[in-house]
Length: 265
Image (cartoon, rainbow, N blue to C red):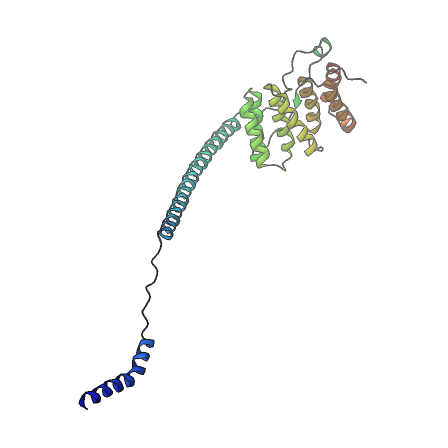
């Protein structure tokens, strides 16, 4: 009886505890481990980091190069400014020195090349110049350029005359200065540059006091450039525009100039 009782009790105990064991087994679930990073993903990440480092290095090099170029440009600009200041100082000194020289009352004609026999028989007379006003700085500046031209210092004269027209573009002497600058270029053997300056003086201020002279010396420049037909057009323009008001000295020089260019009529 005792043995049978224990068997029944054990069976009953197992039966009574079976639901709890089943529930505990259901509640207990093993925790699965997270998968580790693969070797490929690690390599990919390393490659991206290396790429970013290279890009950053390129950006830094570009910034250094830009900084170096900016420094070079600043240095070059400073040197150019200093050189310009020196040239201006030299020019002002020459103008001041020339202004102290005696004022001439006549403006001689430009040096002419070897002329034909007909042209050689009649040389142009000096062009009368208006006496400069010593109290007018503009007149003094123009006269400084004129004195340099008269002394045969053509480069200095051209610089002084250009400085004058830049400082006094509306002055009555601007027409004179541009014309004389063109003549200086012609005298120093630069007919092309002379033609450009003389034509610009005529077109820019046809009523200027030396516009007619610029047309005449434009013709002279064109002859030097082996363009006699164009020179004849300049002389024809001179007669058409200023025929009634042309100064006597220009009228006297014009026939020989037309003959040299073989103009018709």
